[in-house]
Structures are given as structure tokens and as C-alpha cells.
Amino acid sequence: MRLQPVFLLSATSPDHFPSEAKTHNAPEVAFLGRSNVGKSSLINALLGSKEARVSSTPGRTRAINFFALHEVSGGRQKAVPALIFADLPGYGYAKISKSISAEWPLFIEPYLAERVPLALCVCLVDTNIPPQPSDTQLITYFKQTQRPFLVVGTKADRLSNNVLGKNLAALKREHEIEEILPVSAKTSSGIPALWQRIQQVAE
Ligand SMILES: Nc1nc2c(ncn2[C@@H]2O[C@H](COP(=O)(O)OP(=O)(O)OP(=O)(O)O)[C@@H](O)[C@H]2O)c(=O)[nH]1
Ligand SMILES: [Mg+2]
Image (cartoon, rainbow, N blue to C red):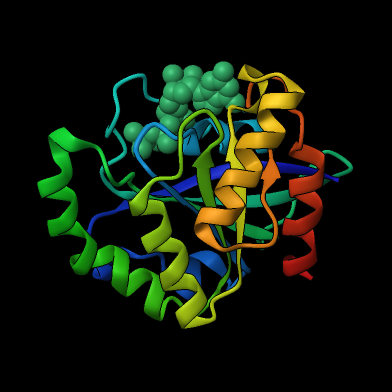
């Protein structure tokens, strides 16, 4: 199945979240994580496109960017999207942590708490760095709210299998989670497995 991504809009407040007229209530998948963890790169790897803007400067994504994914068959794009992807602003970057903590209660928290079509939250953690308290905070939030979530470990290509295994074990221990799916936007390892999980919630 081929999916054509269409950029919908950039939201900086709950009034801007795309309406049902735009999303047709298609299941939504949100990508969350610290600034620079690789959210936009992972979306690009999943879509095989450069639709989501990848920044080289941490903290570039300052809004929730929504993309509609339309199934293409026989060269024709279906009018109703199969899925919506939401690329969320990164947190935890020292230089801009003030503006992030200001934005969090204004539109990120309302998004996570109230967004009806939100079917899965993909939490990204960097496999190359030790467990971060801000990630624990987010994961704890998801455990408490019982929103379906999945933790993926990014930039797995940078590590040997041995070190990757050790780091994943440390992340699981510290965040108190059973599973972390290792992925690489660079080599696309783990991308088919992640698609499988996304498709499960989309059904
Ligand atoms: N080696 C490697 N580098 C990666 C991978 N994913 C992302 N990067 C690099 O990490 C940096 C940040 O990636 P982004 O995708 O912009 O990260 P982000 O989480 O969207 O960042 P913000 O939008 O600022 O929150 C870029 O320089 C990417 O090239 C990966 O799987 N492997
Ligand atoms: Mg980004």
C-alpha cells in the first residue's frame, strides 16, 4: 500500500488543530520526544519522503505539524486519509526550555489530553544517551492517562549491537517499560516493525 503524505497545517494553539472536515476522523499518530531526538527524521523515514521538515538546529519544530496520509491505488489518491501524523515540538533543550514549558500547558497538554482521534503516541528516546528525566516524565504521563503509547529508541545505527542492547536495557529499566523498539531513520532498520504497530492501531 502506498501512502501519499499531504501537509495539513501547523498548529500553535488548540483552536488550530485540524477539524473533522480535514481529517475525516482518521486515526492520528503523534510523535513526541526531546528536541533533536529524531522525530522529523523518523516521520520522513516512515513516509519515504521529505514531507516533514527535518531541522539541523535543535528546537526548530515550534508547532504541531499535521500530515494527512492518503492511500494511492491505481494512480489515484483516495479523498479520505487513512491516517494522520502529528509531529510535535521537542522538549528538554536547555536554550529554549523556558518557551517549551510555556507551550506545554498551552497546547501540547490539551492536545494529548483531549484530541479525540489520537490513536497512538510514539515516544522517541535517543539510544545514544543515558536515560533522561524529561523522557521519564512524559512516559509516566502516558502510563497515568492510559493513552496507548509506544517507545522507540532512535539513532540505533550509531551503535554496535552490543552497546545498543546494553543501552536499551538501561532505558527500559530507568523508564520502567517492557519494550523499546530500536529504529534508525538513516538505515531504515526497525521502520517496517514500527509500521506494523502503527497499522495495528489504524485498523
Ligand atoms: N545517525 C542518525 N542520525 C539521525 C537519525 N535520526 C535523526 N538524526 C539526526 O539528528 C538530528 C535531529 O533530527 P530531527 O529529525 O530534526 O530531530 P527532531 O526531533 O525533529 O528535532 P526538533 O524538531 O528540533 O525537536 C539531525 O541532524 C538528524 O540528521 C538516525 O536515525 N541516525
Ligand atoms: Mg522536528
